[in-house]
Image (cartoon, rainbow, N blue to C red):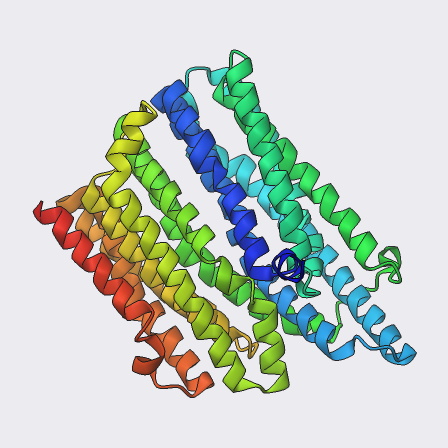
Length: 467
């Protein structure tokens, strides 16, 4: 019973469960989509998924900043003392008011951007689907509901910042399973099309926002969020906005470049080649998201340890969970390197798995990215934000490298451009700052983690290219 309660309330295990249930999208829905729908419709579905992932990027700066700020307050202010309790309630109201103001602006920006620039980018993909009218209608529905999903991150930030990650992840797991089951039942039961699959998924994402708002009301019963406080002169606002804008801008420059590679390739590649690249990009990102659970579920704890000045424990928790991320990521990359052909034959996919060389390069690129990203998260517990510098420079290096190499090696230029960008900036400077903060020996710190894993993936690439 004790072990069950420990797992039930474990941030890592519940986050894993959430990601695993979300990965059912790969295990169940993706094979069905690849088997039952034409390449043009599959590409449309993938592009919608990519744009949906931009929700995380658009909010990445503010979301992580608010979680850290709330976490500081959660650990410092919660107490039985009535005065301290009142101070904490006032603190949460202030943050809530600031989030409402900021996310209102973000929602408007997302609506305008998607309805104009997004439509311009996607119109060619829409033209290549089997049903232009339904594709256009679904896109309009997606654009209209996207700001609501973005707004829902207000509630998610409050829950995660208050260290209620296990609660959120348990509910996420349930909703992911319901969403996946609904789509699978629809595909098998009705004369399905890809457009209704997208709408069903969007519906459950919107319901999840309502769910999180109810969880906030339940977990903050003594705090009347309707009487939130907001002032443009608030010190928290002055502290959060500059750092969030810097980190968000930087992330958009680097991760936005990775995501936009699909749009760029989509303008020149035929549906089959584009579909193959999208399969690889989508799969590697899902593997990354699932593998990162051990570390990212510990971010509120890392912030707390830094605020307490417990640097030794901060280093111990960081390396332990970083290594787990590396191990899981490497395992899944190798799994698909050698069994993808069998898997795709079993599901009778209409879209091919990417070439083994492209896949192994994507694995190396994303592992290097995880290495830099996790160290950057550790350093960000100081609330000293350097994301914008690192991501901005890295994004520029990626673009230059990919453009120069594309003429010679085609689609392989995208992962190689990522590797060049990360190695020249992001994934050496972020670890350098993290090592300084933790006061650890880099070689000793990484000997059981990133070093063996990167060697394995490089050997894997060479073996696949030589076979």
